[in-house]
Image 1 (cartoon, one colour):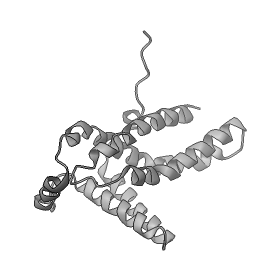
Image 2 (image 1 turned 180 degrees about the vertical axis):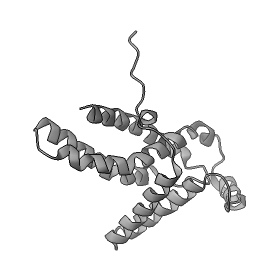
Image 3 (image 1 turned 90 degrees about the vertical axis):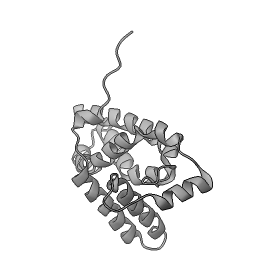
Length: 167
């Protein structure tokens, strides 16, 4: 039950963090659209829904199927939690031609935020492949997940928002 409770709290935090994605689109290193972000976490959300339904109907094995998927996607939750903190700063960045010029002049090799560039590219590749090569699209997402597993440092408690204090 505590795993489901934590997962529900993580889902609420994820929704909040996904709300920041449109503001991040001005950031040269983060090119994931809101639609792409939602597609990236859709398998986790589907598995979570199935786990809750299984719990409510006392279906055997529902949690056993969900927990490995949750573990696989925890780095993605940490990624969005970390990057959503930059939303206000990104909202102040320029748009249009000025932004495009700045992107072209931004050094990329061996610079901070390599994970953002890598995941952005993998998600874009997955979206391009999805209509013609579903397996290839999943491979691209698999590479993104693998990169985040190696990059993100977090604990479960980092992903579970603190309980609201009573007034």
